[in-house]
Length: 229
Image (tube, rainbow, N blue to C red):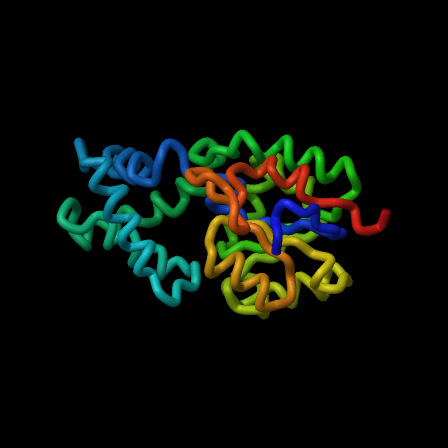
């Protein structure tokens, strides 16, 4: 797909984590704060971030269940907090990420959603997440933008499985090529969406754009046209 040529679609669906929102100020900061409240003081935030990133990149068949999240937490605290204490802390950590205060909405999100909604595009969510997502989107005042929210915990399949995208296609009632998916992960979002027949862009805010990547989400404004005009 040549991203310099405007794309005619009727619906735009978004990934959530890394695309619309991210933990704030970081996963390591949040984990360390919860741990401190439970008596584990002065933990190395940067080490927590590094170990979380490593655990996340090696997560394999992650099903977004509480048991899978608990295992990830244990890996993140490896060498800093015992496994027994990690298991004791886990409910508090899990609950903390329900709080909208530990999430930031990227600055390019609201202008993009406002523009697309104002031009009549149908908007949706396709996300690998758990039951905490819908309440979180509501708390962040994002839910109202989306007529469809497809979450892996409800569908029973995670991206890049075509099933979650096929569910979205069915609910929207549109041909796949009239739908654009935008996310931050090449395999899960771009390859997964394209395998189901959708158009796809990857947002990479640390990059320079080009080759199917958006430098910022607002780049979408000039790259999508209303297919019904």
